[in-house]
Length: 466
Image: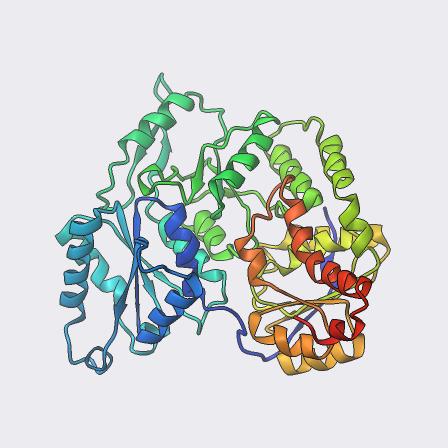
């Protein structure tokens, strides 16, 4: 797609703060995805309260994360941070024996200039457990960018892929880090057994998805004769994919620009720039782009996509011609807007906390193409939107639906605007052909609720109901 985006799409940048969920919440899905990990969040009691409430931790549950709570003495630099973190990590190793400990830095560690990166290598050598440091503070990052910083940090620790020119032409894996104690031998043997030829193009997908969704995407690629050689993150840290020159990588989420940059610049991987696999249209475009780069002709993709659209007919009839306004929260806004436009909706505005035009170039081009094909106006894209200005614009436009953060949902409902929490799209399974229905299930729920109320004759409740 050689489309000049700037000529038609309107980009604006306001001066609003990040009105988003805290990025340390990435622990919620990452600790479940990486089964042999342990996350240690270094912050204040406020961070601990947030995790307890946001993640809904039960008293009997034993999640693989914990808080290293900073006290007044820590903040005033009167205590020895290294010794305290060592005490906690030794206890973690004894109680849980993880393959990796991931330190999550918060706003407080940034403000007091806590040298987590400086302490980690020394402590790692001492306790013989890999320690990965990731910054996930709300000062610099929006909601889902917490995952981005974690995966970027983990990309540095993945074993290196080197192609030797001997008779066997095998790929040998070795750790790029001097102090990496994870037993990666099994992963090495797996790569050797599956990759014997220099002509093989290994493909690594990056982005945290539930195992079932990752399996579905893998199956779709397999039906096109493409094998996924690894995922970042893997189910287990010890199965981290091999990276290096000659390895192709492709993202599944639009908020992983830092990880993509790390994979290209630091690990010398080849990035496949593609729209993201959200909606039948996005999934087809994602697979087509991967196949094109790897030199494979697609088979039956058009029919596969059309079959999904046919199954969505009831949802499409409900939302066709309706309007939607994205206030901006989780960086999924461009992909979701493009899919909803394809479904027949009108998108007035796409608010987004942070926009990397290079990483999302293919998605932006696809958005532009979709608007032209559907004969609808191009939505304005507003980075770091000012919520006050957005409210004024919504009063004028009166959209049928606003996709927004939880803080603004009830006030908007009170003013007669239907809302849907953006955080629900983050935790729902929305990737791939099969899960397109789940996206529309979330989008149409407020509209179906209002239809039900009207059918019951409760028209007055529609204006202010939740």
